[in-house]
Figure 1 (cartoon, rainbow over the protein chains, first blue to last red):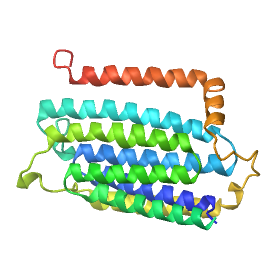
Figure 2: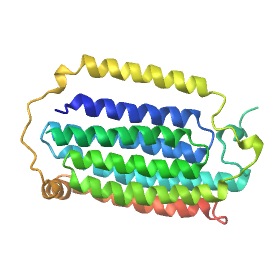
Figure 3: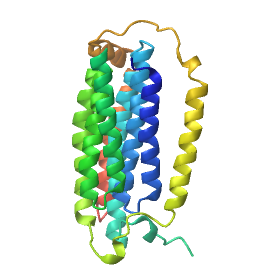
Figure 4: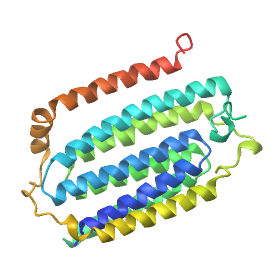
Length: 100
Length: 168
């Protein structure tokens, strides 16, 4: 029998992989993919609790989260491409214009 | 019940393994492929939780739309030179340590609070709950839904504006 703890641990695993990827990778595109993994981990939690407590509201929030995910991806990819046009790099540690 | 458990472990193993591959592959295109696999496996978890509509939305929006956007962004920015070959930044030790500490902390929270998570179920969700989801979404959450659609339009315009040379 699958309890809610199983879903929480799966979600935690995906969240931690996403956080480590977002912090450690240099390529900003892969960083955005890691953020996508983090948002999916949150979605698993919402849907699992929706099933556990017999309340459909968790799924509603998951729907909104997928919408926000798409909006976030569009805007952040736009920003990354705009930065690439100016600085000719997508590597996070080469964007050091403000660091003296 | 047994089939349910097999589904859960199957999809979660695929999700975790391909998530690890997503953050460790050198090429952003390989990362994108493994991200698609991870997202579809997450959709399988949704299906196992009987959230059919979210499974469809996960496939259509996350696995199809967003990843295609990432691939489009990775295509012009993919440069190959030995100086750029390093995958991880020099703060990777900090990232790993932070992730492990964070995971331990959340695990303590899960196992300490595990007893209090079992609220009595308010009502049993039916197996096909897309209609119930629609009822709640278009009655109780109508204003947030409209705001979400407005957010998507603003994001569309913002994405175009950020890439428009004359505006930016």
